[in-house]
Length: 253
Image (cartoon, rainbow, N blue to C red; front, top):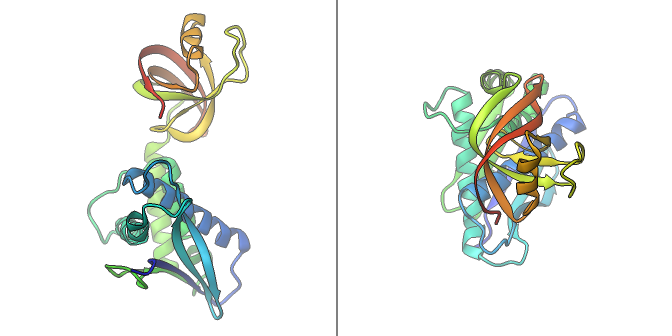
């Protein structure tokens, strides 16, 4: 079977701002990566990514395919585009009030969808379409015009507002792993960690006691830790984690 192709097209009257176009594609790629991870579409760390293989004349038209780093798992690679397009259609449909089932998205994913539809939202008379038709087992077609894109972004902003964290929120029994660690239990700088249920970005990390830091520094990158954490935010975004308690740890692989 031929590779599935995702056709990304912008119809426009006025020039599209480059940052809107590139930001939309970056968000599309990041959301695809999350889709692959969530649906276990890769095996043995053979990473599947999106690639532009053709730009057509006329409107902005990009032909996008999925390829595995080592060209293994061909069946899963071929299914990735179609399943991802289906997820895009359901999620955007929810933001347009066409589908009732609410997708489970964190703030980063919500921002991805906001960026994906931005080219259509930026200018009146602009429309964005994303289609999985060529080579796909099940055709998926999404089209969103300027008015719909703005409506979707407004609903996304509302969802982001609901998720924004109050300052000094305490979360219990969440999974934390080190992104960067200084092998010095007295150091107050240089430590950064990730809690994916809060943010996929590394955040400056401190520890409530030397004992907690010493325990984590035993295996800073080989283990993930189930912890209680105090989250400090600026404008709703996490800027510092303070690890209060370690409940358990698991292999970080």
